[in-house]
Length: 600
Image 1 (cartoon, rainbow, N blue to C red):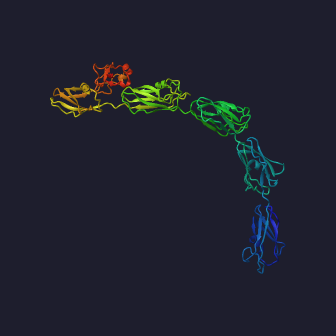
Image 2: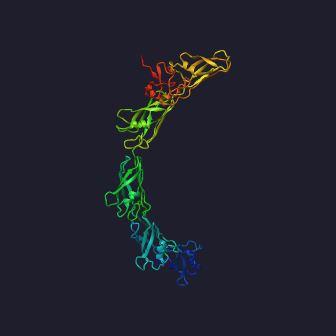
Image 3: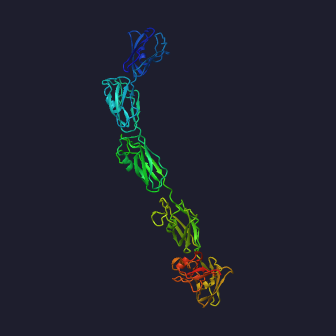
């Protein structure tokens, strides 16, 4: 039995029986067909050696592959079974036979001298070494060059015999396509007719797959170091940009960093200097804020080294990561109204606090600025004072209503610190938000007739009630005012009395008809007074049903005003006189100012 086969030629050996057993018919057919059990091969030949006897046989087995071939001849247990080997007298083959013929060693390969890394530009060179020299294989170079290798992030540029005239050792060159890792694969072949198959001349295919990864150069990265947490809105702040390596020879880097490499929101790059000089790894960057807002600084990754904003190493590697940071601006200057009353009485000043988010310097023109900045409708800002002496964060605002209308107080946001009425911090931060509040005026005084009879007899007094929406002070001489204000057609007011003693909200009115005509009774509201200063705005609007219209000059009536309390006296009501009067003593009444009489 041979020790090895070549995968193609017959494996020849002899089968010797213990004796010659002539007369056993069909033995050759049994040996050819079913007697042997062969793995990785087939019985192709069985003949007597020499002819005319059955003791010695020559057997030939054809291998099916390059694998080991196992040949077995099992003992016979039944002479009637297929493949049985028995003597003419019926004796069976009593023992089993087995032998293995080794195939040719498989064709293998390995990469030798594969570099650990590449620089992204030069050829990656290494050797492909096969397990044996298999000269005579036509087209192997073309197979290796064109289709055998699978390369990621690179291209096969070279495939040549390391020594001319042999096929065992090949020199391979791969060109990287980028700075990424390059993967090189040579897959095993299972079909020598397929494109890219690597096979020996005898047909043995490459039995193992090869793979290797050559790392690219480390990526160029950057980080911000020493970034301040906050800025003041005016002063240049500095930070460091540290690259992962020094990459000398990168021309124009300073210009790129100054001009276009950075993306800055609410600021501008003003400085870019090497720290220290003569290297490109560490740079000091200076940024000037444009506003008091947060400043965002970004150094984006580079995608095109030919772009103006590109940051690339001399070998062409681009900045691979983006660095970003935010430097917070100072907090905005804000304010709020505190303690604003819900309503006013139309007569006395009301006060509330204006609280800022921070203190102002002691020497500040803030009171004058606030007097100019505060917007008030239907009122006048009387005073602006510190709530606490020596402190300028909280201010007390005094407002005097000009009428009984709702008063609106507003402090608009400042847009220009140089403008009149600007409210700005010492460092130039403007008031960032607008404030507004409305103080409701007193409800209007109204009246209604109650119980007016549907008809009269032309003789009897007509009685009904006049009910006001609120009570009047005891000192008010309302009957005289009502006698003047009630307008009656075909009748005369004869009686104005309280419906209930001590109460001045409901009044009993008595009207005497002058004839048998219909009687019309009207409580007229006077027309609004001319709006001339504070006095004009304080006239009869509060008591519309009880006052005569004031004249354009806002003169009082010859006698004391019926609407002034008895403890007061009426004086000429010009805008200047009312404005100069103590505000606590001003009362609106029929175009007059009511001044408190001096005590006896």
